[in-house]
Length: 204
Image (cartoon, rainbow, N blue to C red; front, top):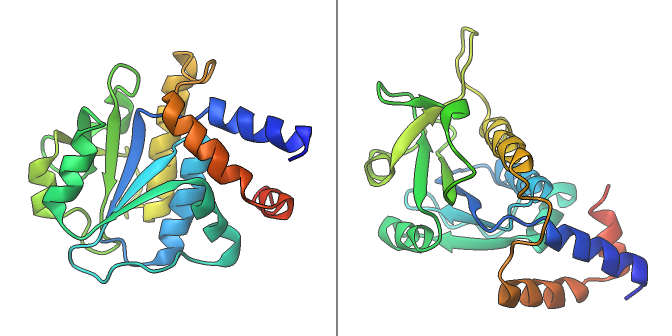
């Protein structure tokens, strides 16, 4: 591994955020999933959860250019809600669904600094299920003033986690390495197995 490549991988690992994740519930289009993956990588999210209780388990992700993000993330796939929530709860103190309800709060009122947070984004057509809404700690909405009042899931996810990025940046969460040492070592080893070409192609 060249010194330049090692420095790049080290820099990326130093910015990974172990207290922020995304859960995708029954998101049908693999291109949407791959777009979410790319955005997650861009803000330092290392792991995401893909839950498929009402659709077939995904076997691949989107187009070649975006799906390369999957190599750099830890992807957990579940077909059972209880098992998925148990795994998420083990690492994240607060779970919020994107759901328009009377008790929903603004995205900008969520606190991404003090406690580990998981954000849930639901199916392209029906949104988050009643079951996962009931299992979550609350609902949030992205403020909008247009007629349609909805965003593509990959766009909604990008808007949401970039608000987390903003808050965490102001709090200094990107100023020092935060991943547990064992997890960091495992990722460094796994990433080091990819060729120089694979690393560079992901930058395009």
